[in-house]
Image 1 (spheres, rainbow, N blue to C red):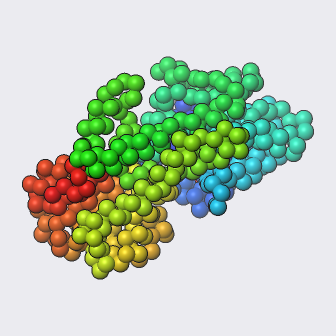
Image 2: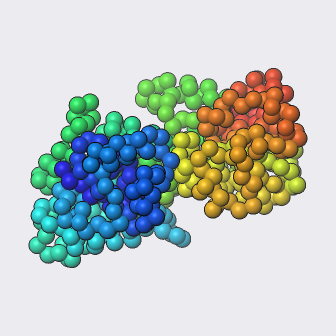
Image 3: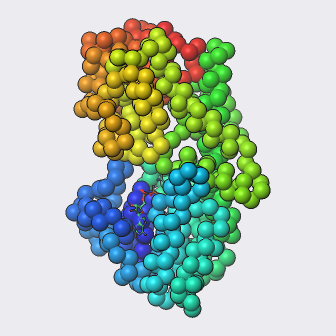
Length: 439
Ligand SMILES: NC(=O)c1ccc[n+]([C@@H]2O[C@H](COP(=O)([O-])OP(=O)(O)OC[C@H]3O[C@@H](n4cnc5c(N)ncnc54)[C@H](O)[C@@H]3O)[C@@H](O)[C@H]2O)c1
């Protein structure tokens, strides 16, 4: 099949490269000329494990192309994916559909022969209807079908998720479109991936429902962590005890500083807006949004308490800035709440992240960015682990003790065990384990 992918970001680039690897001929298109120029030069605009090789192989084999102009690729395409951003609209939290609708307009002008237009972006219920109306208005008589095919990949494991998904959701009532979607995802039949055909609106809602459920689950264990601290229980064990119940499952039950990233914050908010407008409010999700926002802010207070109630004039070494490991994505990362709050209280921040510093530099003023964890710990009164990158899981505590001014570790991801840290001579604070401070 010939595929045009409009939007070459985290989702568009990974999906485009994976479809090419399935054997389709794919053109990834982006308005961002610098991004396309880098891709054409063989450079990756984002950090995603394994992506550079996947892209290089498929470019070499003549199945993957890049362009700034959609015209030619759309004209030749059997399937055109819309994978542009749908950020929160500033001020009100609705999904901003400007980019999706602009892409629909551009596609409309170029359609040639029966074409399936597929929304891969996360979009509120009814967006497919609007995309269809835009194209039909711009090109009366054009032969096309609009399909919803939400993406469930996780940054950091995106290629494996795309190639071995738990399911593929396809929302359409059009039989010809179904056949095209089956053909696009045919390689997945080998590993018996369920292809779930639904109505378009249902498919659009499945994506929000899934993300909101996971956000609720994370927020639930975070509240249990607070309760554990208050009553002297251990959230790691509560989580394990819950998660071993198959009805609950172990995933997304890890207490931490609150969820962030490019999806959960904006998608929960957009779902809340959709539901309120539809007269069917999602109170659980509303509460989740509020609890999570408050939690990210509360994490700064945890650091203050670990430093005896005052961070003014103190140096804090921050390890990890991205919203999770194995990505360079800084969107809505907890670090963006925690660091400015500590700075506002007079702390000096020196930070290190293996992949996120390029982005972080634009978002976090007055932070001293370091070349590694030990430089970030130099002369620090405390170190704070915000993201659990592998390289922070086996820190050399002898080295840290020698370089730090005082031996305080705030571990917002529960990477270490309190008893081990006591053995290392650190005053150790974590999340939801044996009192607000475990020494
Ligand atoms: N990032 C994830 O992990 C993830 C996972 C699942 C779903 N999603 C959803 O996928 C969508 C895309 O997310 P993303 O993280 O890839 O965003 P992104 O910001 O990384 O990429 C979007 C790209 O689209 C480009 N673009 C915008 N308008 C365009 C146009 N008219 N023509 C060509 N290019 C255009 C932008 O320049 C940008 O490069 C969102 O709706 C998101 O919610 C994201």
